[in-house]
Image (tube, rainbow over all chains, first blue to last red; front, side, top):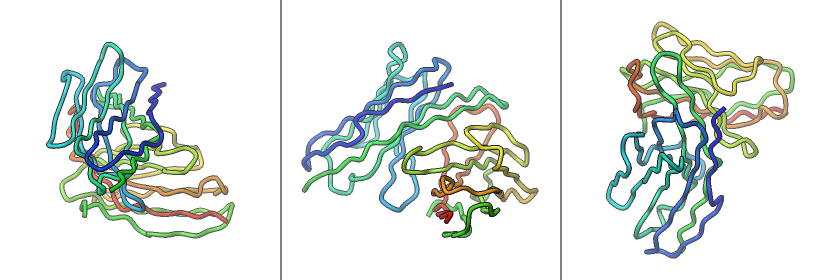
Length: 115
Length: 116
């Protein structure tokens, strides 16, 4: 089955610095890659996503890049702020319609932004 | 607030018991997903229902089952509970257009289950 590796497991940065979280996946059929942010005690929330036919996507301070050949995708957060502190999960989804749907999450990265 | 509701918020029970978790999706969403989040296993996809029918299965144990009713709410049934079933159980919903690759999922607040 699909295996998603996420690194690092913890990341501590100073406010204003950039943070990068990387995920690798194993199944080349994966075609959708969302990133979720989960604050302590709260629900996961989608922050950005990318489809397999796109190499990069940006949304203000957040960007995601995808390298299909190498089977890895990364989350980039620039100008980090203390409120960015949370656990971030990547996911790899195979969704080709009907019952062919598989979703695998990474183990998560605890990001701490120090003021 | 995502518009997805889950009840109960907390549940404490004993090993060997059976519990039912309930989820109401966002208005208009046809798909419901169930997830288990524990410290050692992380976030695990359990099962998906679309418009009343099971669509996809993840790492769901045979002791667990789910269903989606005509009004689109869903229930996750956990039986013969073990200590290791203690976890946070989330449901999520999406519009669920068949064949659409990019389906944004909206998570509910979760049900925290403690098995003693």
